[in-house]
Image 1 (cartoon, rainbow, N blue to C red):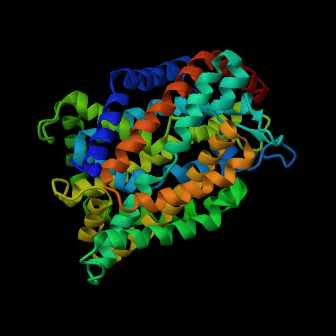
Image 2: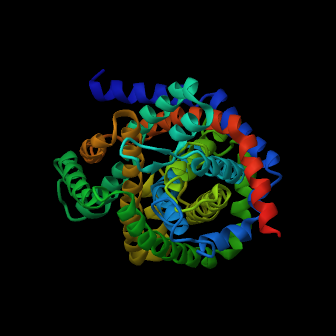
Length: 455
């Protein structure tokens, strides 16, 4: 067994161990608890959340670094991305159509989870060693639970430093460049790894131009790129769905049936399908992982509940809307049983339905979503680094982050996704435990906020 095979096996074992029954119960059970305990706030105040997002309640002098829209855009920059394009394809390939159903369930309860985690990220903001206000699970744990829970905060930051390396995004970007540019033009045919390396170096250079600018630059770039690209992507997908409108009920029925039988998966089981759906949903919308709370913790607001309401829109936009549309396009195209995986499967579906324009559009979407995700995750990793070692080491982290992009471009998709899955699971443990313990504080603040709102 060579080193790569050993690494592949080790990462698979790590991911499998972390995503065992206890974590699934923690995420799903916690989400159900938050939904019931909040008395369905995410659904009752959906319209109010949209008004907050539109800037109706923004105040220039509020503490924080970015406005509500930029905070959600920064969070979506790391969620609306390869998880929606390559991650959904990976879910269908691994868990069959039924995995999408469990992604929906995870997203619905994830809305309540995000409401709680992101409300707490404003309620319990701390200050870094430079005196700047910061939010995120590590500060929530320290400020909300006290010093005796500091090891839990350290665990989150350690997992975040490495878990925020964008291995999957960089890997999938290299894959689509190789499959759609290098191979057709007979470039690097004798050395595909060299081609991937070239892609990785170019990507790292582009990302470095933004990430060294911090959250304000990331927020501004994401606020411009993400909404525009999401609209373009969805328009193309809707064209495909309209073409096959009569097939949609059958596809929906297939998803529901397979969610409880696993017939579409070779050797599949209900437990495996549920696990795949929850993993891919967590990777897609990050509810309960804690990364999203770091972006929303930078929002300019004095109302924690207000930011929690904005944050809860994330899983709806990301998983219920964007992921579902991608999955329906793949399933309607009839190529879900193909041997290909990840972003290549989605590309084939769009190309099959829209021809060459579909391929070009998807490639532009992949480039945009991959890069904006890389912008967002760099901020998360920097924040965890600053918490562990001090703010002076944030720029040092950026160099490791840029180097990881290059490495990710040449490793296998299995190593990339298992590495990220395992560390996301590790981040979820302190995030969910602290949120469960502090959930009564959120409801106290929510009752006060909504009572004032209705006056």
